[in-house]
Length: 109
Image (cartoon, rainbow, N blue to C red; front, side):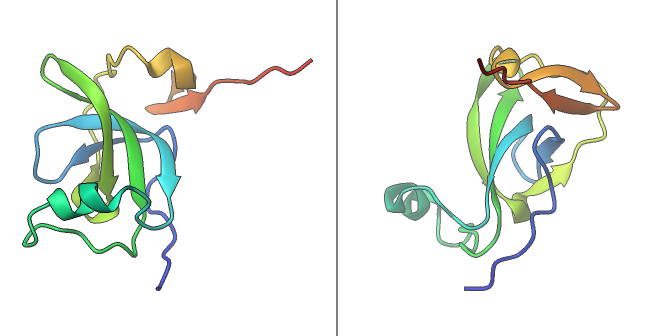
């Protein structure tokens, strides 16, 4: 399996190439890492290759917020400057700087 370098990064706002949602990346898998059932549920004609980065997103579409798992081929960099309103943003990020969400600082004792 040929592993590629991720095109997008944690804290970056992206949008789906086909479906009407946008979100912020909270994690990246270098290749497909979800269940076989999830993968098989995607119609074969739309099923992405497993050997590309997959992104975990805090996603929103209209009035709905959720988490999403999306292949790199289905994401585009978002140029909409509006901030996201996902209720879990504060669990992952402290601020937004230059359009990028900045990771929460973890304190240890």
